[in-house]
Length: 297
Image (cartoon, rainbow, N blue to C red):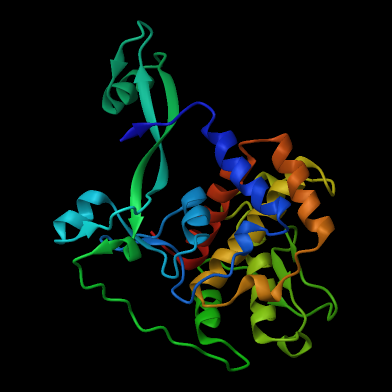
């Protein structure tokens, strides 16, 4: 495990900004039909910023292994292969004497109303795409493609969400989520150019709904916000990324059904350049929203 340099937030944000300056929103990648990035050995889906970065690579299949996992399966890394970092937070607890203590000791001190200093810092480990590993028979599951007006994979996600908001058709010309009523309003599926476009829009509003007080209680939904301010921008970024993640999971090409306008790109460039940690925060919240919607643990 390697401790991250203090400017890592800026480095990752710079990568996102570079994509935006090329006219591409990286959370709107041309997702592969294999869905969300995951660890091939454990089957676990990567969360937060890892979900974003590991899906948006040139590798056609977003499955990954660590060096140790590849070796355990009898494989080896191809010569010249480049690894990708997986980020995670490590937490260090210290008492008032600046002595490092365990999480159990920290909990004990807190229960006695004693002070505990908590320091969290970012670390990473490296993974390799399965295309860069040889000596292993990779078993890639068959992918079911569905071109019917209603897409079964999408309907399944919507119907299986616990404590889901109600779907209404009050306004046939608008798609929105109402926090006060806890309802999603959608035009009918027939009004959209494609079924994929309908579900991409629905997923966007569904991610917004996870911010309700009865779910994740996200500030961008629970408190009044002004169009264009930081909180509003963060909430929209969460909904954009969350919808793209859900589209990846249901084999929808999000980039093909949403617009990457110049004004849209410039808007995200402005807020990301102003806050180097925003992409990390939004990706983490988008990941939580997707996990809540899909009941993923």
